Image (tube, rainbow, N blue to C red; front, side, top):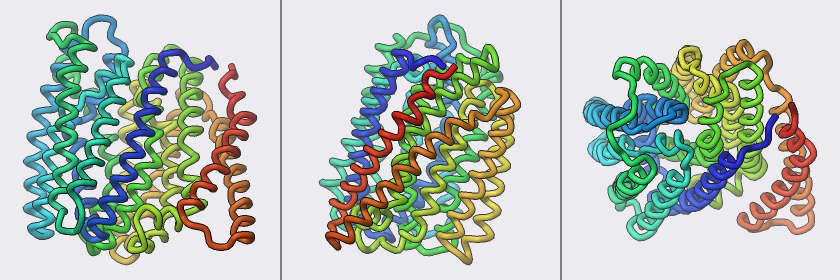
Length: 474
């Protein structure tokens, strides 16, 4: 397998810086909001975020992946492609907001909850004008990195200065759409003009052709949103705001743990889209993608599995400690998502979105049925069980289709990365056990710092011997 090319390495560098910077800002934003608002109000925000995830998918309707794929393959100007997709997204944003109004009226969860939901819903217009797919397709991810860092920094600053208690719930809701809009407008004016000289020239598919391609992608994305967010929505409908807040807190950890996935997919998706010439090219591209994705993605969920109480206590405080009951299954859920992605993402890149869509629907139906059956009686534990089961269904289905087209499941990659992560986890737990026996109680921050340091060095050492050789395989 070929080594990483220079432009992939450059874009990975941009996205790595963005993910680290945005992750740090997001972490402190989470600390500020959760501690200031408390579990119940934090649950109101979390419920709105989960609902907005579905509405946001209606706004983009698969145009992110479609646009990145088509632009990456285009040899001439792409202005007309971009203009047509942006116009479609703005129309869909208006439809999405109307759908959100109807949901708020139907939900009958109270005036405060409805108001917060409509405030958060203004973000659909920001989503419509977030044109990361252009930069991704043209392999100019420095602009995506700038947008992510600037948005995260503004959100953190606004949260710190504006949110001080439960009475600032409305201010907290306005922060995200306003910050996002401010940055998106700058990127739209400066970045797009510089990168593609936004003119209405170049070839573009007709609306019917576009819709036939984006609808299967959109359905698949919607099904993944169902798996990630239906549990929060159903908890909001069947349980109280406090339980929703506890569960949302752990779901935010899940999103942090999945941040490396966005980094790798943004950099590698255009490369996967180009490797359709033969099963050999597809296999080599998938191996490179899987190795990067798993090696970068596995450490954080494994580390949280080792120190769940210290993680929750440090970030959220004592009022959220009941949420530790679902940390272990949630981090297992993250690991399964990464395994599912090494099979599912290449299918979309290789124009197999219809097979991907059918399997996504099956996984989502599994999730909805299990959530409806388990949440009323078991609450958070039922929600996470449903999520785990649906991701396993998706992983097995994508793996089956992947093997049919590529000829193998590239099993050695996840096995070596899992072996590396498992060894680092055992070393870290042994060190922490010895430290506890010798020193007794240690402050959570110091405990996490020690755990992270030991795990990090052990993981890198294991990766040198177990994962590095995978880069040079033919």
